[in-house]
Length: 300
Ligand code: SAM
Ligand code: GLN
Image (tube, rainbow, N blue to C red; front, top):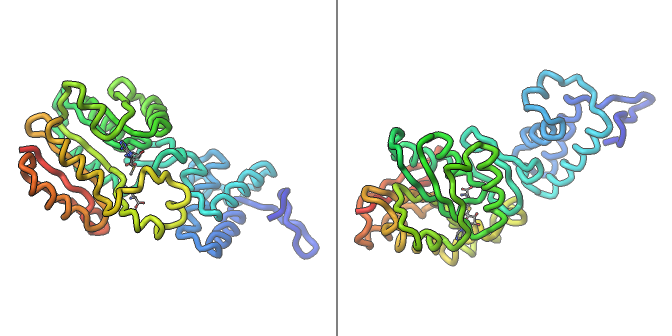
């Protein structure tokens, strides 16, 4: 790619238009082995141009300015080094909402929308004083989308990472939800135990990758996302053990614990809950790929 907006051809100079730079970048990303070369090229270019993706399609012939080309080139470099697109743009869409992300936060995954939907369906929309806890908040994706879609709901959220909490706090403010959210720093349920509040639901997408599998994760995840958001201990179940042991006493009557799970873990959660007298019915919900993704445990 030329530094200015002219590519030297055979005796002529060519202008880098939006359409042409996208085609070039798509091919470059493809050769670099990226999974979604076209999408990545488009998302990064719309970020540089500060436009929606649809803008690109109706401005294919628009020439790029030199400063835009230079900024785009920086993005391309980061992406071929496997930096995730969301860390480059600083944003990720989740449940139709825009979330700021930084390298202190896990990038919200589409799978986690299954967890949010499961909770939305089970909390009573008209209930005026429902209170939930979201454990391991990251960007705040889970609790903030629940607050957005249930206007009566209030939430308390916990993370061990102060840097992640700062991002969640910014996201709460940007979405106009700060007044219904309390953010607490600490270890899992510990910050909630001193209070007297009881929750209608406790929701969590805890770290759940078995430690031995971390080395085999895709480089985008392994090298860039926070290890403290991924490492679930030797068998991946460390956080679930604690949430199952300590969660029920913090739930209101008829409350439930809703957990995202990794592959094959939902049945393990069901078996673990069956051993504990405080848990009754267990529901398991599949994601769009058919994987058992969410376990909902009801307090007895
Ligand atoms: N809820 C976000 C989402 O679904 O996108 C982030 C989930 S991420 C898999 C797990 C989060 O749990 C991280 O933000 C991490 O910092 C936090 N975490 C890890 N250990 C924790 C602990 N002992 N207590 C509280 N939070 C913890
Ligand atoms: N779904 C994430 C991944 O596979 C893991 C998130 C988690 O540990 N909760 O990259």
